[in-house]
Amino acid sequence: MTPRAEWDAGDMGCGELILELRQKMLELQPGEYFLLIARDPGAPEDLPAWCRMTGNRLVSADHPQYLIEKRRDR
Amino acid sequence: MTKRFCVSLTYAKNDTDKATVAFVIANASVASDKESIVFLSSEGVRLAQKGYADDIHEQGFAPLRELMANFVKAGGKIYVCSPCFKKRGLDENKLVEGAVVVGGAKLVEFLSENAASVSY
Image 1 (cartoon, rainbow over the protein chains, first blue to last red):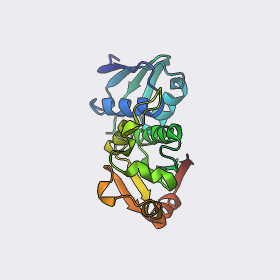
Image 2 (cartoon, rainbow over the protein chains, first blue to last red):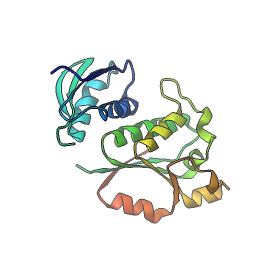
Image 3 (cartoon, chains in turn brown, yellow):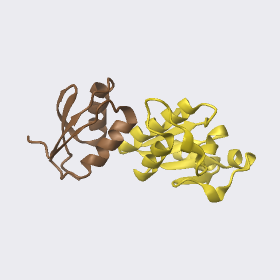
Image 4 (cartoon, rainbow over the protein chains, first blue to last red):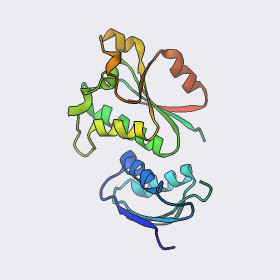
């Protein structure tokens, strides 16, 4: 479960956060892991929702650290 | 779950807070793999003019010009209400990237095919 990449998003949140996250995860291969650090107070609700909608898997969430596995079918 | 999402925006410099938040939500939509549009009507159509949004930067948010460009770059479309655009004498040759002037039928078609929408 070693992340292929990680990103400290600081206080970025909402649409700005997930759009940037999406861009960064495009660089990963399916099944690779991404470690995100997001301190925005909305992140604990937003990131699970984003993963459900996009098919990426939220492996662990321990605010502000989120480990995400890129979906395996694209 | 619906795959289409519309953000309707009727403000420009008369409420830069609403204009900015609308595009932040639009960015959330396009980032979530939704077919996404921002529908600009009433005063909102001014945002479709190149250069107009360049000096809009709400505290705590990215500059509006950047939010708009990122939305389009990620695949979002900006629909611009034709009568609102014409009423204000704006120039269709100076549209921002990703913007297209449309009539009501285009919006109705989009919304009628299982889309969700939020308005600002």
